[in-house]
Image (cartoon, rainbow, N blue to C red):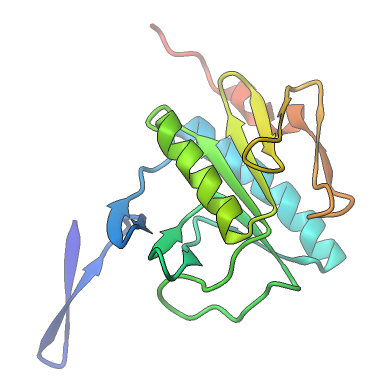
Length: 188
C-alpha cells in the first residue's frame, strides 16, 4: 500500500513498510519472512552483532538495501549482512547503501524460489561479497558459500565459522534453531 504525504501543498508517494530490491533497473517487492525464519534471522543477527561489536570489526545490518552494481542497476536486500570497517562508507538517510557487504545471509522462507536464490548468490559474489550463508529452517541446515561453486552444508551437529571474513567467529549451528523448538507443530 502506498501512503501519500503532503508537504507544503505538494504530494509525494511514500512506500509504507514494503521491502523491495532493484533488479535490472526494475523495482521488485521482496517477500517477508515467516515467523520461524524471522526467529532464526534474529538469533543469527544477535550472535553476529555481539561478536562484531565486541571486536570492533564493523557492523551487522538486517534487511538493508545495498548497491551491488551501478552498471546493471542492481540493489539487493539480504536478510542479514556484515560490513567490515575496511569497506565502511557512511550510509545516507534514504535509499540504498552504496557499499558491498563482506557477508550476505539469506534465510529461506517457503515463498523463496531456488532459481531466485541462486541468482542472488551469483550476484553477491560478482559484486564482491566474500561469503554467503543460506539458512534453511527445514531441514535445519546452513549452506556456506565461499564461491558460487564452493559450498559446505552444515547441520545442527556442526559449527558455523566466519572464516577470514569475520575472523574468530564461531557458532554451533544448533543455537540458531533453538527458538524453533518452542514453536508448536501445526495441526495438519
